[in-house]
Amino acid sequence: MKIQIKLKDTHSIAELQDAIKKSNDEGQKTRLRTIIKLKKGGTRTSIAKELVINRKTLLSWIKKYNEGGVEALLVSKGGRSKGNLKWDEKIFKKLANEIKKGGKYWSLRIMQDWIQEEEGVLVPIPTIWYHMQVLGFTYKSLRPHPYLGNKEKQEDFKKKA
Image 1 (cartoon, one colour):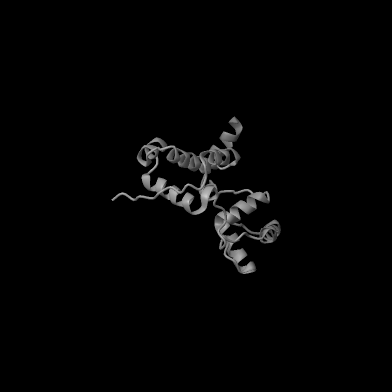
Image 2 (image 1 turned 90 degrees about the vertical axis):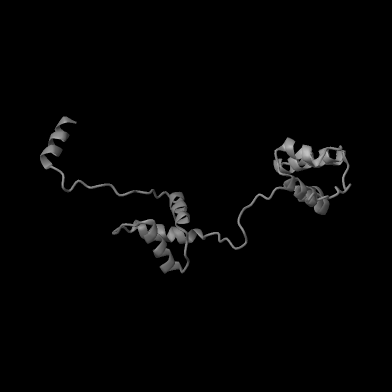
């Protein structure tokens, strides 16, 4: 079943071309060029094939244009959703001061537990890693310790080096 949505005649081709020149959004420029092609008589199928997009995508662009004009064709840049927290730097500075005191090993999991205990918030491990990197801390992985190594072979190796 074909869905027929008529393109509203909100802007002239010249106005749409002017909007392309003013836009910094490549996605919006593509959508505006599509609307221009439709206004010039191009078929939806041929335009969809030319742009290598689905006809449903093309229809959604037409709906957006009909409802909100040129501005509706802007691509969402994403970013933080309103519910996503932006963590307070003080938490990580306080943690850094605690680590600098020394005396114990700090893994990311231990850091996460410490933050949760001290600050009452559960910070994701990748966030802790990032902020500690910014503060100049580096990740050190465990290395095998040759406690069962042959002492004579070790001394011979040191002499050769």
